Image (cartoon, rainbow, N blue to C red; front, side, top):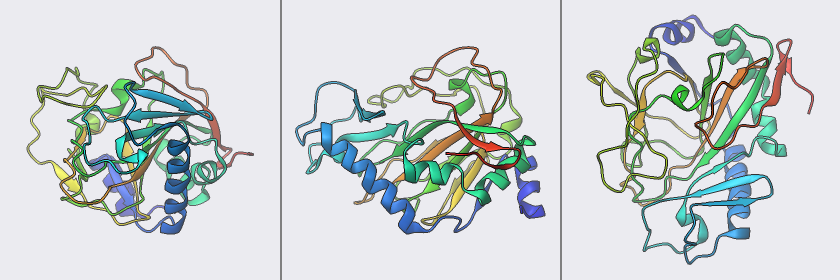
Amino acid sequence: MLEGQQLAAWEHDGFFILERLVDPAAGDAMLAETIELVRRVIPVERPPTEFHNVDGAMIHLEKKLNPAARVPEDHVSKVFSLHRRSRFAAFARMPALLEALVAVMTESDLDCFQSQMIFKNPGAMGQPYHQDSFYFQFDHPQVGVWLAISAATLENGCLVVLPGSHREPIHPHVVPERKGSNYGYLEIVDQDFTGEAPVLMNPGDVLVFNANLMHRSYDNRARSRRAALVYHYAPADTKILGQRFPVFDFMPACRDGHPAAA
């Protein structure tokens, strides 16, 4: 059950952390499975195209070239649509996670509609300030879930959030001014970001955040990857009003407050 301070943080800040919710070994196993998918279709010599599909998943490469690449996953930015795979579906329907989502969304029937494994390899550029809800043109609000597979630190490109910005409407998003920004990145420029806060996390920690919350990430200046798994949830009766995101896949996660059947 959520503690009072977590519910208060949700209302005031738009996010909270569930510490040590997941066994770090489970996160490592999901990352290893994703790497196996990548290696089936991506060579060490970077392919020229941005997206690659394999077994229901979509691999998104970094726009910035990585001359230090030694293995195929060194070219990868994100891998989408993993949540129907066994390990990933088990996390999507984890009872303790669903309990938190039902509490903050005040809905007992929830779907997981989007998933992505973020690689954030050494040298990768950070994503500029945005709201995830900008990409999800739905008739119901959404909640994001961010599982730290590796530690998220200042050096390796942790998330940075603007507490309280979940109460803002969806802002215009424009092409970033920074040269070399990744494919698909857009940026909020009409907001004062004074008061932003980095989100430091340990492996197995889970950040639950309102999809309207403004957030960005630092560049990865470390020598190691900062991996994370991100899911988004919405009420089961959600209707899509428009399409800015390349793929949605609504999978039942919770019914009547309990994990949905596989």
